[in-house]
Image 1: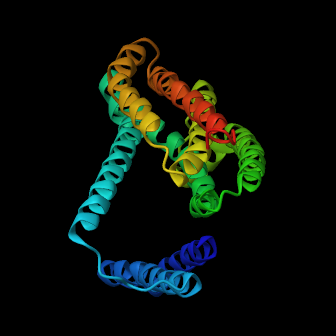
Image 2: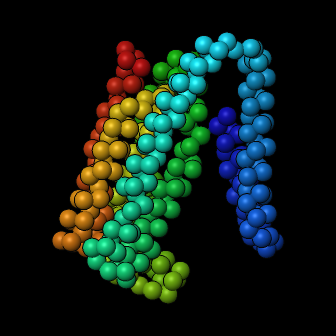
Length: 273
């Protein structure tokens, strides 16, 4: 499944790039984007069923109700996690505009987009591990899980540090080439460097926890952080502007990271996994 996900990501990127170069309108470009996803999805499902030699038995109503209840509960948990993460990450620009000015909010948005791109690249590269973690957990291959989580954590930290340092050093030049505008706010770059590093590490451990369906603690921490984030961002933003807003997000995200690390450590103990 991990291979299919990588192939799907490559095909989607290639299809969008091809649609852009050929000047295809938005409607057809959207269809071109989702077509590889559909094809790869059916291929993945067919390969999975063939290798497992599974059929489609008739499910009793009671069993169907139990499974749907489980899926509904899990779906709600993922929805809460995604919604909380979106509130923490995507409201910063609005809050900067509220506590400072539209101009400062625009500068903040440009710099944050650079660091958000780095977070997205890491998540795209690491996403296939989600299904791999699930497979190895079901087969009780704890040795592989421990080794892979530790090694990928090292890669994640190195990626975050190198990428963050490069953006701190050359981010202003990139934005100037992009928009013909210089930001010149070093404190903002430093704060977003810390913010992006924390986000990348949270994503790393969340992929493992999601893969083995450990969601309750994540829901609690993310939803709690989302509730605290807005008023804290307003308070600190009034003191330090855009840097204060992102500092509030850092304060909110640190407990989430600590919780994910602790939960991962517990789960990698063979007595509790």
